[in-house]
Length: 194
Length: 77
Image 1 (spheres, rainbow over the protein chains, first blue to last red):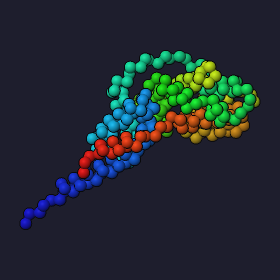
Image 2 (image 1 turned 90 degrees about the vertical axis):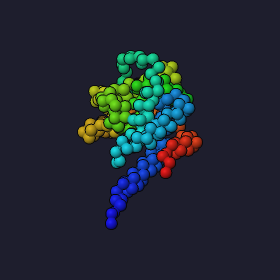
Image 3 (image 1 turned 90 degrees about the horizontal axis):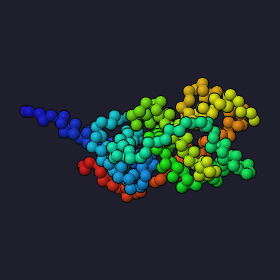
Image 4 (image 1 turned 45 degrees about the vertical axis):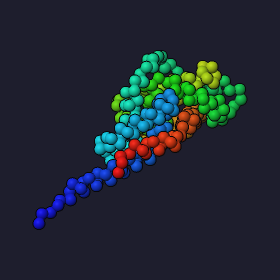
């Protein structure tokens, strides 16, 4: 009596189960991925398109994800690559002005321009509006903004951001430093006139 | 409050400190300085609250219909 080997059907069943699990886990992360995506691009429509492209590609190439590794970072790597592929490089090259002032400069500016002494929290919340921050962030040139968004909005480590963007960790640190400085300079201009 | 050389170092450490990227020795040194320096402590607290504020106001919820569209991209069983 010849035996029907169950190997192939079993393999297919296991693969289907793994794929479903992958898809569920990826979908559970979609809120967090969207929060980052939304600030990497200029409009909600672009973010939605980018999310759909990202998830379509992720579901197609799920086998290249290694279970147990950082799935959110893996999804964001697809997303940032697609974003770059979409020809976003229309933006002008960033002006590389020297960073003369230290990291305390925004606090110092706000403090100098405050008539009365208030708490540190008030210095931020009272004087910056949501629109100020969102428009200041969207004006940060892409290369710098990508890193700021991944670390400050996405809460990724420098190492994760380096892997997502495929750049050295030293470049992450320098772009983050400059990106935050550009952001704070814009906030200073909006609140105290530079 | 006097701004001194240690404050310079502390200022350089502020971003990696808040990013939790300093090594143990640097973090301990930064915290020791912050314990005794109101000038730097105020600026660290400000930076931390600025970051929280930026994260809050820049975090936009995903539209529910997008989630449905993403779910529809799954491989049919």
